[in-house]
Length: 199
Image 1: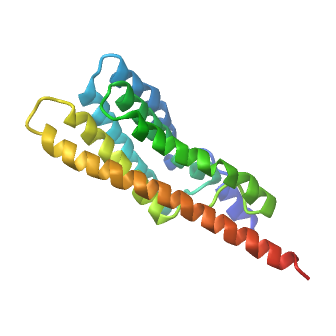
Image 2: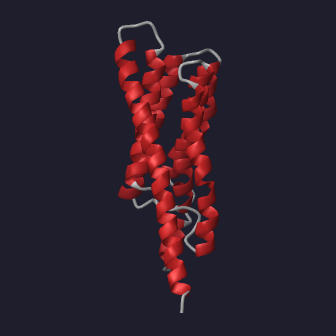
Image 3: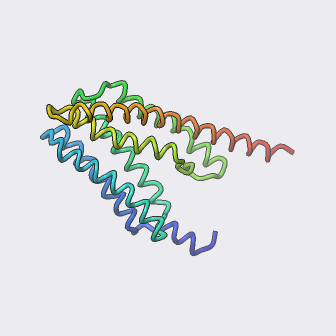
């Protein structure tokens, strides 16, 4: 890797990283809104803002050539923490069942074995995020605000419930399927490494 590319990768102070950090700082605020004053309108607004900033930081990173190692860690971390915080809030408010609240974190637990294997093979801490994982995250991030709205007594509750649950179930399925595909990729890398070692 040339020195200039390495320096670009090591950058910390970039606009996309600032957006990802702002999303991270919003997680405890979101939980407080949901569990404290139960200000669902503000909580849904914060979720929508987080979703928009998630799209925006990726767009800026590519357009302004501001991709970095830190960004590749912060961005998925912020997404996962928002998902976990939302699941916790929805479950504690009895809006979703606990099986759904546990199904998504269990997939992340399944992924914990991947980084040590990748490091041993010399591939770094994580595999590149593929489209299926992004689609799963997008489905879940769209589903959660709708499930909050479905819990209200208003004209939009029934449509929000139908669309929200459809996205939640579809997103959970995609989330698990993407996890299986990541393990398939790791298995292929391990088999490739064994072939290279075989005389």
